[in-house]
Image 1 (cartoon, rainbow, N blue to C red):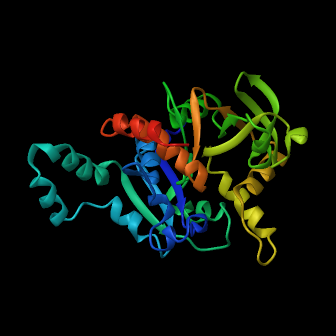
Image 2: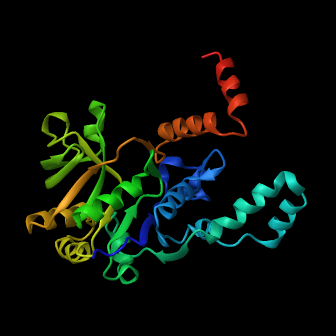
Image 3: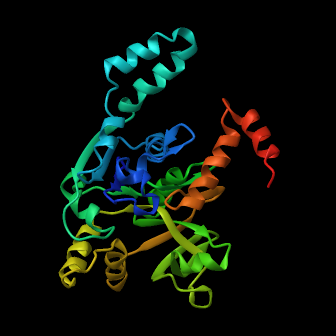
Length: 298
């Protein structure tokens, strides 16, 4: 019987330099999509898919994230209560944030690169499969969420699973890594190669690997091997470990997220597009906001 996916690792130690000066004091993961931080959107999706333990790998400048998922202070709660019935929903939403999951924080140490947060979380993960996902992008999918689809794929194949989207523009092939291999069925590739930013003519498929992954615990052994190959100043990437796994014929599946739209809030333009789209859907402001946008002399 396969182990249930109970834990998620979220790296959040970067400096967010693309958003300076805003991120000088506030982590990029806390940038709001209307009224909710990006990282909360990611956590809520993970919890809804059955994740119980959220492991956030942070840096010294990310205390705001820990405060956000902590119990609200009494002064804030009292202020909300004074608003009466009008603010009752805010009281519930604020109190529920810290109760969503077990939150565990680790200070990142080691070389730069997206493989280091995995190494840091190793002792907490133990010998379990787990979710690895970013804190500044997400895929919103219906009727089943991105993480629900990844977990279903893991339950079927029992190996590491890469979330994927179809590349739609030529520039996508210069931004993402792409999986190649045998097509199992529509939206599923039995991966035999991963190529970073291949360009359209050299891409092994049109499935770009973005936003979230399920890794089996054997990833740690291969991160050790990748780390041993680093020269001074090199960065440690999880893709280096995946490529070593493929050399050893370890199975990896690329899974297209069906019914999904990818949101990359890690750059300014895509972040603004995300805020506008979510603002047009927000029940508190959607009507007035839509009228405001119509009235702009563009």
